[in-house]
Length: 135
Image 1: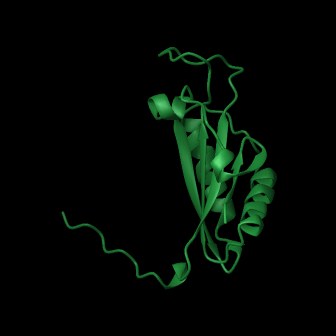
Image 2 (image 1 turned 30 degrees about the vertical axis):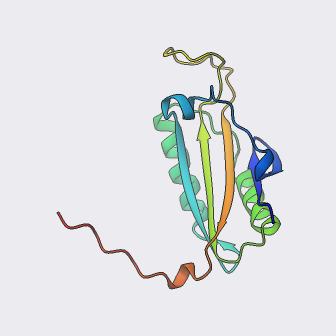
Image 3 (image 1 turned 60 degrees about the vertical axis):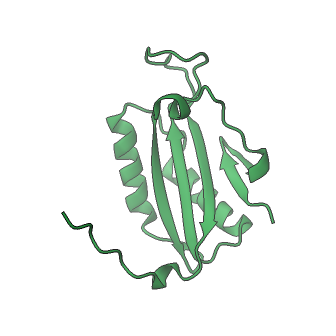
């Protein structure tokens, strides 16, 4: 079964989703990611994740391509389309593809790239907590 992913407003089979090699996330690591846990088909601490995402985007002066309601609808749709009971939703917002690679800040009208996908993780709630690394 092919997983459905979200790319810039479209739900696509993962094999059809493509991001340009000129996207600034690829070329310069110019992006922000967030991971939302899903337990029993429900998003955990969605509001907290959206606050952190916006704070990170603001710190980098990046546009947020969606409002919270649109993120919520898209993430719920991904959970449904991929039949996720326990798992994760990974999302990444990049500054987008301004065209040719350049160190200059991209033009203001450059559209951000938004990617979201799910990963099934049965037993996610039962995973033991990780011990902190020793110094």
